[in-house]
Amino acid sequence: MPDLSELLGQEDLPRVEVRGLSWDSRRVQPGDLFFALPGSKHDGHAFAAEAVGKGAVAVVAERPLDLPVPVVRVPKARAALAQAACAFYGHPTRKLCAIGVTGTNGKTTVVHFLGQLLPACETITTVRVEEEGLSCVTTPEAPELQRIAAEALAQGKKFFAFEASSIGLAQHRVDGVHLRAAVFTSFARDHLDFHGTLEAYLEAKLRLFRMLPKGAWAVANVRAPVEAVRAAAPSARLLTYGLGRGEVRALRLAEDPTGTRLFVHSPFGGGEAFLPFHGLHNVENALAALSVALALGLPWRGVREGLAALTLPPGRYARFRTPAGAEVVVDFAHNPEALGRMLRELRPRARRLAVVFGCPGEADRGKRALMGRLAGQWADLVVITADNPKSEDPRAIAQEVARGVAEVGGWFTVLLDRAEAIRFALAWARAGDCVLIAGKGHERRQILAQGALPFSDLAVVQALGGAALK
Image: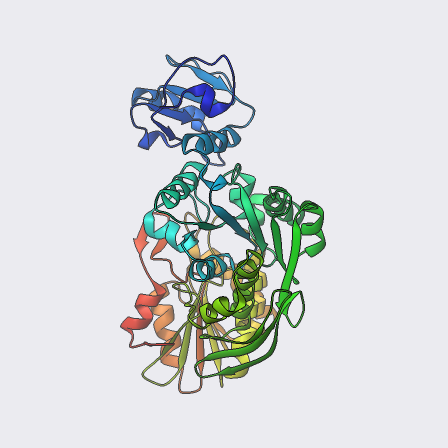
């Protein structure tokens, strides 16, 4: 078992063997090293005594604590947790080809695609985090990230692709990962409740690229802040991608009922290709994964075959047909850029377009009216509903969204029961119409003030007779 000095990189620490790492006092096991993490709602220092009572053999803290076990003072407990996690699990990413994916939108889909294009590839996505009950959202805490990487290495995996959220990067969860490539998918307003400013939000994402060693790949969408990426990773090899632009680019796009045909141009080869789904944003996400695969040495022919077999993640551009003949699209679009892009893509295909969405509570209030304006601008019917209101009043959230819809003269109704809102929109839609149900995608819970309740947009659509489309 490692001791404190090995895990924390400090000499002259007490000889204490550590059996595990913990940052949640409720889950401490005997022999754990407990990290007192400061938080916006709770401060781990207040729970250190409880952790010791459950068997923690030492505590890492940012301020003095009077405890009957060794207390190691550090400037940043989260950074120390990441360092300890890497050491505890034997630095698995030094032996794996690790790829971190960041960006406002598209992270889950790009990582999901990488898991299909790269041989023997382990992935961590927002969907997996929810399904397995991992810590945090999108990017798990460092010990879970490193544990999954170590398990993948033990299983013979060669590649390790994961989502690197701005909050996860700011909170040091990704520190110590040895990257071979990093991807920047897009950049637009989101998470300002945490970061405060767009500048701080961008800076958090650029942390991923500052981690790149010499010769690694920095892969960036041409719509992302490419020059900022270049400055953050001066010794990395920059590779851009995009629709009609970039070093890896998609040309001559054409949709048919089975998917999207395109021509791929790249420094590594290219030619005709096929994607078994629709949506320009999905083409961009496929280009991102394709760029990584080619940059890491996979041959064009094999990657081309892989593109034709790709599947989308659950709750991303999931298409259904109602008994009345309308099309329904369930998507995770939960910020202004994603919602606006989905509406603009669906608008030309729909005789009439409806959108069902809400905005989460305890989050960036500034985006609520913005999303309302986008919905009112592009949709014939806006059904405003609840989307994880948490401790906030869902009606007050809906009113902020409604103000944005009203500003552009949109037609809207408010139905806070999300299942009822979906039912209303599907009853409104007829053959040739389209209903976008946005914001929750794969999620299986609705988080209210009283706690989390089971809920799934996908399940509601299917219960109302929606038949899945390819």
